[in-house]
Amino acid sequence: MSTAASSGAPVPGGHGGADVAVAAERRWAIVVGLIIAAIVAMMIVTGLHWSAMPPSRVETVDVRTLHLAGEFVESNLGSALEADGRAVVRVVAQQYSFEPPCIVVPAGMPVTFRATSTDAIHGFVVGTTNANTMLVPGFVATFTTTFPRAGEHLMPCHEYCGTGHEAMWARVQVLPRDEFVALARRSPRISCVAR
Ligand code: CUA
Image 1: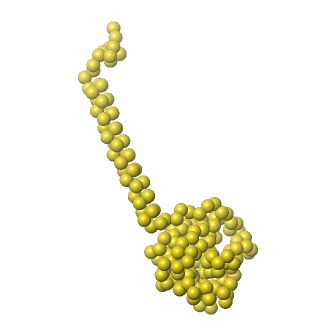
Image 2: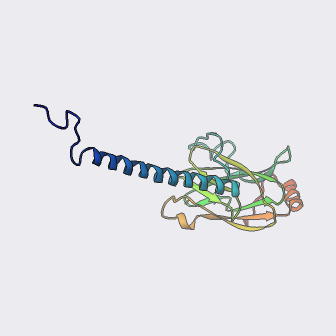
Image 3: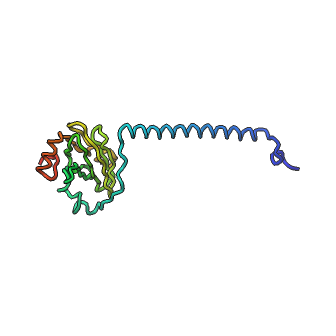
């Protein structure tokens, strides 16, 4: 003799319960889908609103030798006016400071940052501007931005990097363009660190 279930006859609480479960799953799927869509929309809107710059292309550097030779030796850090007229700032982050700790940039012209870390993951944001990046050991973070006005900003580390994280920050002085260009013509690498 076959049972009611195997013969397909209705079982009290059987198929009805399954239908309720499917309906509940579908409701949850819709709610979760809406939450994901809202979060993605928020990311797109804030990214565009703040002109967020995604992390740079993958450019690597050897953390064991970067202080000995190449672009990130100490004497090459700071701001420069390159031969092609671009302003470039080179920065190294380490626990728990930036080198140079006071950075000079021009207002009203594109400034390219090239920065890396020698130890942990660090990051920085320049005041309320969109100059904002992570610094990952072994990789060169690079982005180009324009500071509209002269002035001074704080540049804190914004990735938790250890016990000294909250004391890790630099200053950024945005100079009028002509003043920056005049300084950069006099000296190949400039910063506002008191010597
Ligand atoms: Cu460096 Cu936090």
